[in-house]
Length: 108
Image 1 (spheres, rainbow, N blue to C red):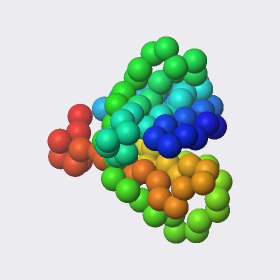
Image 2: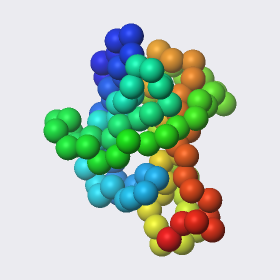
Image 3: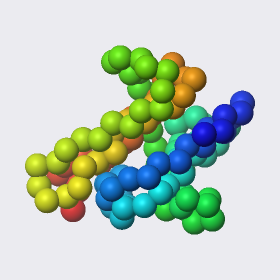
Image 4: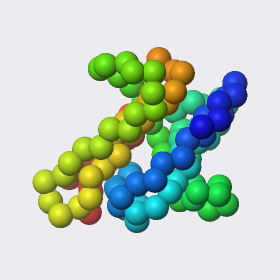
């Protein structure tokens, strides 16, 4: 993981998960803050950073048990869909990102 004043870049090897608007197949992805002026936008890219899968709106989140490590929280779903990416906390930050999903009545 690399951190500078405005960019956080973390790589994750994951099983298939849902992000707002799509399901990512199993693989390795980069999660990166998208904009120095809006720290609530997160970009999801392929492992080498050459393909953008999504730019996602987040809201600030505080960890229940701060660990100082990078932590990803997944939410199990009641239907046959894969777990949903819920929160991302990255090394060296007191707050993280909660991903914003449409309400259930607006989801397909």
